[in-house]
Image 1 (cartoon, rainbow, N blue to C red):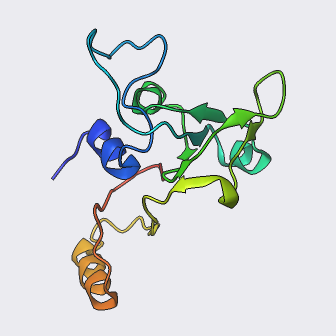
Image 2 (cartoon, rainbow, N blue to C red):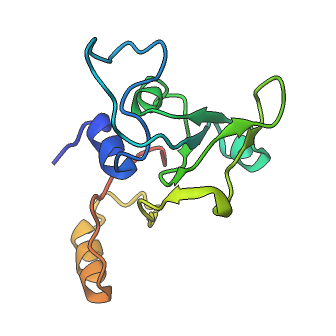
Length: 143
């Protein structure tokens, strides 16, 4: 079953951030009043940038969707706040355990190039340890 990216984002983020951008939204209906969470997530354009803390603070699902082809990593768990540590707004600040607002998920990553990989084995193993996955995603490029 194929799921659209906006459904994946919405499922993973669990209303922890706004649905639409607070300002300059291209998707928000005119009379829409956003009652969802007001947290923040962090997104990065490469693993190296993530390690160095060079990234973006995202406060809406719309922001994730607009940039979905540019990010290699983003935090599924929502933080109370996100800001930048420098005036150039390159280095993110707030990506720390004591700032967590909401733990939405944990991911298990299987890296395989085997076209015959049995995804049913993941379901069986998950059931045996008492965790059922919400989704199993095939990501050809790892993101």
